[in-house]
Length: 188
Image (cartoon, rainbow, N blue to C red; front, top):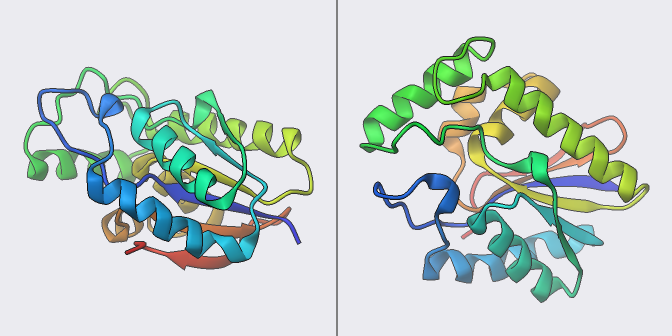
């Protein structure tokens, strides 16, 4: 059975002076990649594909290295675009994400709507599946875009999901029907 494993990147070093698209993994984040590899091993992924953002790319590289599988990057797996929005304080950031997730068709935060981010992400997943037919692929991505995609695919509350997941987290979906096989909200 082939599956799609969607992974939220491991623990990143949050830095209000740097755009989140450039954040790196913490030492704990690097260590959790080994735990992530062991959690994913039973699914026998054949490749790890990540967004081009450093925290996702390094999560994929460290996890794949432990699993002995190759890595790739895919443009459309990146986080919701919000380069012009400073991270600011955590409370304001969380409030902005809640608005984005509950009003995905409106441009309320950043440079793209939630719906546009979800559509871009869906196209990226389709491209990955086309390149790797009948394989179990792990795709390392980001919390907001993952929440938008799963809300659409599994009909779940995107805010509740986004608030529940840690770093890293993952879901396993059956293919081709995207039924939920497993959900792990944080690998520790």
